[in-house]
Image 1 (tube, rainbow, N blue to C red):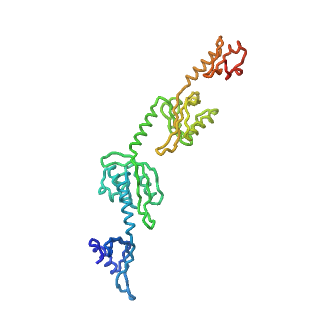
Image 2 (cartoon, rainbow, N blue to C red; image 1 turned 60 degrees about the vertical axis):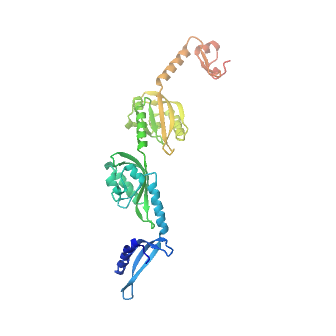
Image 3 (cartoon, one colour; image 1 turned 90 degrees about the vertical axis):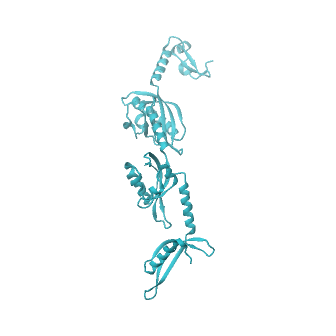
Amino acid sequence: EFITGEYRAAVRAVIDKAVQGYETANFEFPLITKAGARIEVLLNATTRRDEQGNVIGVVGIGQDITGRIAQEREYSKLIDTANAPIFGVDTVGSVNVWNQCAMKLVGYSIDEVMGKNLVEEFITGEYRAAVKAVLDEAMRGKETANFEFPLITKGGARIEVLLNATTRRDEQGNVIGVVGIGQDITGRIAQEREYSKLIDTANAPIFGVDTVGRVNVWNQCAMRLVGYSIDEVMGKNLVEEFITGEYRAAVRAVIDKAVQGYETANFEFPLITKAGARIEVLLNATTRRDEQGNVIGVVGIGQDITGRIAQEREYSKLIDTANAPIFGVDTVGSVNVWNQCAMKLVGYSIDEVMGKNLV
């Protein structure tokens, strides 16, 4: 009288089992109201007995879960139509959620993945242990953000995925699996590799440090110029290990400013090579950021100006020792060159004229 046709056999089976003494918990089925509306019920069917223990019927304790079912359907629809690949696994790692974006990205249909073990079937061998560890952690309630791993598409292509793994729970708070929201970062990884290649092969010394000053970029030109290999510098503190004592504070200040977003151009400082030689470097220090705009370090593009500095010093020496009076002024007429001959001729020392307006 009151159960919809497609559920009559199932409900009759639950009642028959309870009459035989086998109780059923959390059985879902629909009821049709007098007004014709369909409501979803969660039922516990319990055997009813008389004082002698004889079965006299069944009592059912129900819960109206119509609202919850509607929410779950809306949730499922949002997941299925999301513009990010979303998958889910149960507590043993079998796929139970696979949205349209995941299907388009990886190429496998829902029928091809549902019930399959995600790690064993779709993760490359060298990443299985790491992905399984992330899923296991999420099963224990420890969620993981921004985990990178590769997936192999149905066509055999490798795609790089950035994953947030979230614990999935039922209404009682029990863990029922893991849902993963992914992002296809294949293009970004390719760009980063191209960027790294360009940096590594550039004809200028380029280095990078993280937010605490440890070297994480060291290109071939820097290696040739300074003499230290990548293995010798990676993870080392740039300022403490490779900058001369009298310049450490100044270089540290430039790096600290760049970490705060204030970039510096044309900063001159010396580096000591592995062989102990001093080289002069002209540096542009640029803030390095991730995709979200967070500062992740500093990249420095240098120029070896050792030869230029030597020429300038030679030029200054020639001017200073010339047998003719030579002076120079800047753009506002202040003295910035005053050689020995000028000093002897006019009688004013360098300290007395430097910075003064000549006219």
